[in-house]
Length: 320
Image (cartoon, rainbow, N blue to C red; front, side):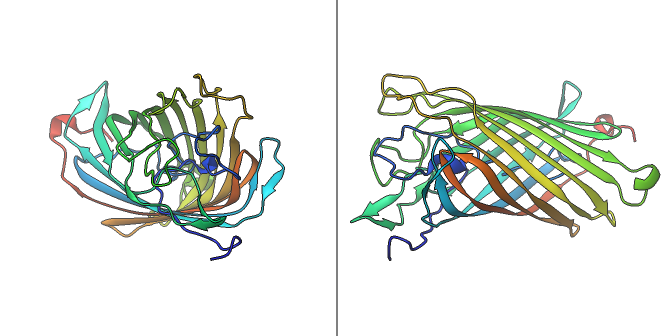
């Protein structure tokens, strides 16, 4: 496998900017856990109305054609392909809090989160894989309004993946992340949109990171804004445009932190999803731009969702 050969790695919830040209044994630029665009369908603000168990399988493919430094200049034209998958398992009991439906989510995953290329005699090699950092959200609330679906959550990542500073076999990032987030979906089905409803989505996430294991280094916090606009066709298909704004919101701290330019990227693309009854299938494709301190390329998400709903009790049903 030559130096220009693409290589693949199984990653789960990898924030896309963490692979850098010439990465050292300990990274000066360390992104957060969440990958922009990961949970950003047009229905992102909707929590299931009916209680039950729900599963969402998300597979991400990212093809990076180049790497950019902190000034936005191309530092490497090496091509790198990423393929990842994860399962979000949601429990929606027949419980309401603060007027909203309660839900809890856990996302076990197998892959690699280290974000470091493994070089053997200057040639890229596949890194080790294993149990990665675990996403969990013990508190998710959803409100179903006349034209809006709103969801708010408090969750995070636990460092369950293996991590040793400087190791090529890391499968996790070595720190905890707390992620509060809010998302809303707007649906208009009157006037010119009576037969083809208009949809709009916005979601905001903020990652707060702990100190990284094995060194005095706390990564800077991360801000992600995701958006989408589109239409609903035939009551089952959503089609539209979507995008994201991804930013390092604060500088890293600690004795091992060195001043570097903050990472960032933007993305814009298209979205389509279709409900087959018991199964929902979705696809989002982005092209990122204005990248700093990270890879630039094409990003795609394939989603397959299904569940085992049951009807809520009469006292918990919303009025139409």
